[in-house]
Image (cartoon, rainbow, N blue to C red; front, side, top):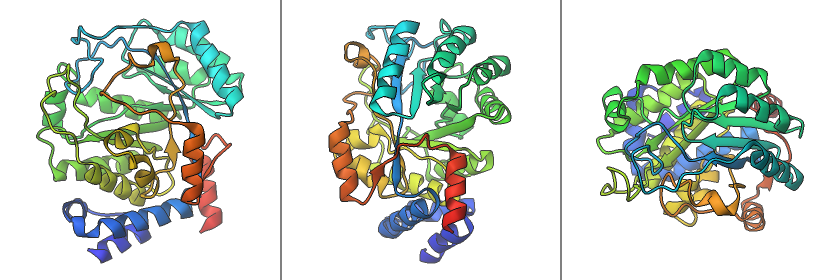
Length: 343
């Protein structure tokens, strides 16, 4: 098993069966996390990139079984921020020192591409990178958003198991999801995706397939988090995803895609008060503090009890593990150059 981990570190390639073996063996966790952390250090350094998250709408046309803002959840108090509110939040984030603004929403078509393009063009005047997380759109819409200045796009596949995907995403189209990701890559977005760990019916084999999909896509960002059931969804009685397994999927993703950006997801910290630091010591290099206004932040509840990020506390914890907060935009291109210089 140790030889497999060494192979991953040296070649950044593993077969499906090799991934399954490592994911199935908890006896190698410490070694796996150490090697992933070493790879992270070699390729992207010790700086942690902060992304300012603005959740600007919790309206959503989708009915994903695990999501608290799904269309059929009538207990959600819906909201939309207007252009002025979004720009004010972005301005505050910029003044505070954030170099990336993440605009995230449910799949809310009220925010058409033209309107979003206007907002993006204004935010770009702040000299920050803009990441979008707004769901599935057409090629033409994605192009308009890219032309307006958007740099990155996050669209999680959640699972590459087609049968499981269909169960979890009623009326959604797995092939269209993949089409969107390939369109984003073609248009030059830094393209992010990721998976949920702990979906009912999910297998170790399908998680291995997820990792291989990330590799095949040559994704630039990968977000991996454990399932946390929301009480107002069909999965309310499910168990939470296994944090350790989620960390292993993340660590293996770092080994196979050594120079990408990987967030220490909030879900990990929600399950374990040390979850974010555990992730940062197992391959992650990004944290996404929520800068959405306090009066609406609690309404964007994909899962319950979501923890926040205290800047001073985070800075202190990072110093304790030999890490620092970055003041760069942290694109994958910068990471690739860092890796070349450091190897």
